[in-house]
Image (tube, rainbow, N blue to C red; front, side, top):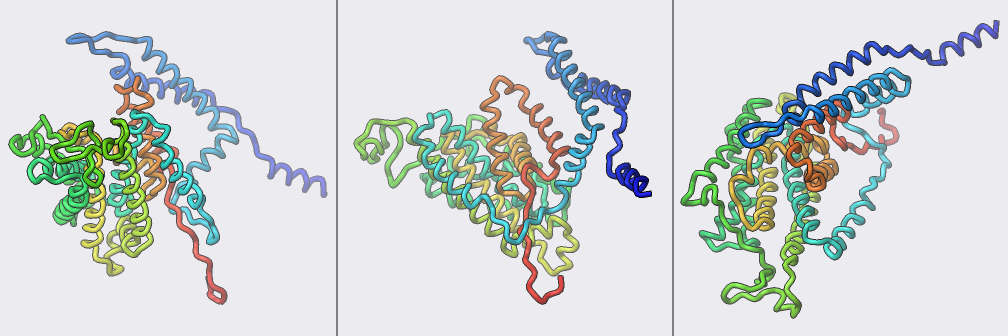
Length: 438
């Protein structure tokens, strides 16, 4: 009797291995190959040559074969026990907000000081090219943090975020040309101007949600770009405007200074270094990014940040709790837009020139991709995604013409495997008090 029970117990606990459904895997690989042929055929197989084109079937055949073999291997792996366990982990691992233990100690307590030390030492060993790439990455970190407030925390889909970016950049160029303002004067004014523009945009869209809100904000971004492109007498139109180099306590970073000015290398008694301007922009930008990170971290822990998250989850419940949804939306638009204004000033100073071609819809899509890939509402994820999506194209310049295709593939893969982004939102749990029922 005991041996029978033991045998039954072993039968229950031992997993039954199922036979692989090879026919199903072959069908899935054929479908994947057909889709790859449809997608890669016009993009990779047809190369324009003036008014004609050249057909390259070999490249399409190789890419289609790689997709089919990869899909066949993946389908067979999923049918195994380890593959099923991996799929189950992906399906349930990213649902909801991750709650950590009450005594959890974040690794950021030692990662952040280490990153600050690396950032301080970095200009000593970096050349001009690496410095400009990192500056561009930090600019997109600012843009991602601002849009993360609007989209990630408040749940307001904004496709015209690049308009606030343009306000900050053109604020520096126009302020210098018409008012004689410099970098330090325009930096706070651009944040205020972009914040006011965000507040003005927020009023007409208070009753809109989802797709309707996205369409209106997309129109706002295009209106800003068209005004900059067509108002020739004021903005210079497609020709753009020059931007003055930043100064430090009246000292200039050029080889020669304007009338009455002093170059910084003459003041210090050193040789002229053309990279000193980028080192200065990098240092100021890094300090501004740290300040924005601190302010955003504090806001998310304050009632305002909780109100943004409540609005994102359910606006009706948010209003039923007595929260003023008008102020909640306007605060998200205003703070997010002001961050984009700051980024615009640094972009204009870094580039030395602005024109409307730098503020197209693709920039808004790129910033939105940073927020989605990093994790909606996740600060650390947005910082990582900003550097990945800005540094990766520099490292893969040979694939520059396929950059949009790579972004699309990356977005699809992220939505399948990590729907909450690279790093999802985490909350530290609360230890229940003694004597209080859970």
